[in-house]
Length: 114
Length: 108
Image (cartoon, rainbow over all chains, first blue to last red; front, side, top):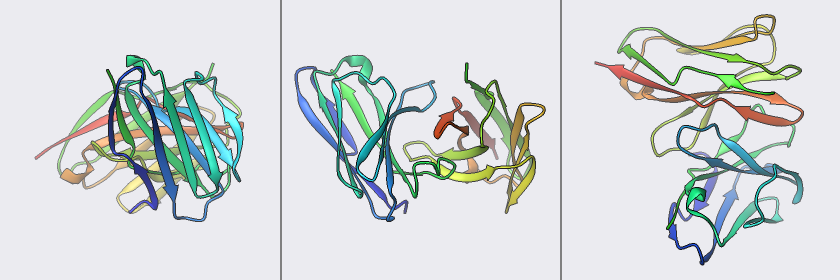
């Protein structure tokens, strides 16, 4: 039980669709993260939020739009994605954004873009 | 640049000991972490070395040598449930950078 939940677990969407991924952490942490995990590539950090403010954006295309309404919830809004965006999208949280040594991950959303 | 190198796959026998190495070409980082990820699951934190030397947590140990730009994860008394991917990661400038991961196969 990781304390970080993600929905949906699987998502198939067309390139013209708009969808959202949801993450919720029940650990009382102050920082939340979105990662992309593609086959045979390292985990790629996409966004970092600290106390609901975005502190990091690793040059992610604008078709990915994060939203952090409060310290427990994180969304990733998707629109006009490309097939190469198919991947596992992982949410994580930590007590502090500088506590990057111990992150707690959610189970991920397996995204397929047709 | 910043990169971490790990073997892509390692195979070992149940009950044996296996070492997964991680070498890096980044400087000025704060520590080396290890994560385990089972197929279809989320990465889970295993260990963290802030200082050089060996950290032991049950059957798992992790080692760091900054002078050699090298670390490893040691798994003892291997069990079939240890079959998973293992990632090393470093903290640098408040970011965490992951290696590509090592797939550990365990034979009965």
